[in-house]
Amino acid sequence: MPKRVLMQGNEACVEGAIAAGMRFFAGYPITPSTEIAEVSAVRLPQVGGHFVQMEDEIASIACAIGASTAGAKAMTATSGPGFSLKQENLGYACLTEIPLVVVDVQRSGPSTGLPTSPSQGDVMMSRWGTHGDHPIIVISPSSVKETYELAIRCFNLAEKYRQPVIFLMDEIVGHLREGIEIPENVETVDRPTVEHPTAKLAAYHVEPGQLVPAMAPFGHGQRYNISGLFSNEKGFPTNSNELTEEKMQRIMHKISDNYDDIVQVEETGLEDAEVAVFCYGGTTRAAITAVEEARAKGIKAGIFRPVTIWPFAERELDAVCKKVKKIVVAEHNYGQLLHEVERVAQGRCKISFIGKVNGTVITPDEILAKIEEE
Amino acid sequence: MSKMELRLAGSGGQGVILATVILAEAAVIAGKYTAQSQSYGPEARGGSAKAEVIISDDPIGFTKVQKPSFLMALTQDSLNKYGKNLPEGCIVVVDDSIEHIPDMPGCKVLTLPILSTAREKVGRAQTANIVAVGAINDLLHLVDHEHLREAVLSRIPKGTEELNMKALEMGMALNASV
Image (cartoon, rainbow over all chains, first blue to last red):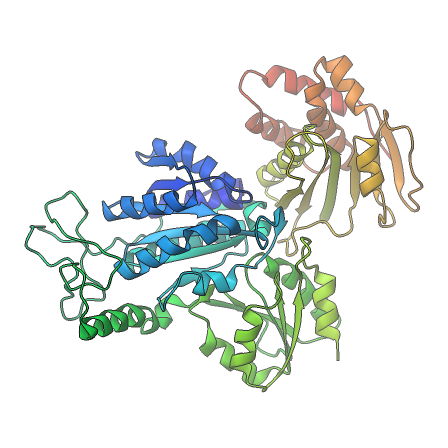
């Protein structure tokens, strides 16, 4: 029997990460993500891992990238202000294809904002925060249980695709405590590695049929260069337009061509629904109660929830737009995924919006009022 | 009991957050669903602190308390702040050190010596939150006493077991009832 325990969302993030194989964490504490650093500091030494508190958020992500390069599954965690600081190195990890998990427990912003209050204001930053076109995977949990499970998924996708994955949490779930069952066994994925590393191997050479180049851990026989400049297959900078094109196409397509593997949604009660509530992360909890109340009143309502935030779940949402009359978009921001929903809906159904940016949570009553609105 | 929504309020440092964590822990041990959360300002001590716990026989959607079935306030400030707009039938426990109890229409208001019991009978002011937990469970019958004891023991510093068990017993001994 799996053991049932009371756990905080931030704590579940660390436990899931450790179950996935995380053995390195570097961070700089910031509310509401601080417990992730605290629990990592306690737990990692117990499993033979390492915790480092760095001097700031920039150094933290740099440190985690370095650890991953040396072969460790690595994570860093922060909130809005720190997430801003991490963007430059996030782009570096995208181009150099370093597996990494970056947790952002969102709080009200901009700037230092409201440190202890909920927000989902970093959704667009999680997609486009670092400069230049780049691939990204972003995942958002709505319960403590899911935080545990999806932390594992973040690592598995990061390893499989040699890709930074952003675990986009929010204060609602990060600071929530719920009972969860810790599974005895979890499925984990490890990055493709080089069996017999030698100095002569080209580190960024991709064999036909390979998704990403095999990655030899630094310090194990293969000497190679890693650069934030576009590089040749040995990792050295190049001005070749052909190689640049090839690399960009490959890193973008490794994500977009594997949409079905990466994009997850949760649909609840949509079979006969006339109204769908579009929500994600902690906001989902208000939507669940609102939809239950709507159903009790005889309104055919359901929930469409992207679990994977980026890439955006446009295929699944497209199917919903064909059958419902109205979509209520609920998010703790001024309207960020709202625009994605409008883009996919293309006027086929009515879109109404509820956003909140004052530091309080969206309540079931507020969503219900939008569901009932003519 | 199918669903209880509890709100505990006090001054930062009084341990109302830990009190709700212990009640949530006890609920998990008892096999119930629970959601515990808190709100506080940036300061570590002083200011007002509010913590909430929902205990239910069914899965919990919205995780925040909407219509509290129970409110405990340990300070005048926290009572002034959270003793408003309470739903009909809400049980309100106020510490007997609170001088002015506002009108709370439709609520069952109970005065209990939480802080003084901790300070004088248990002998340690810091145990007020455990006294509170004992009194609350005795009043609301949330979980078996055995589950509550286990929960308290799992969340307190080593070496303070005897003191906290005494606080828990003292809380129950207040024989709170409405």
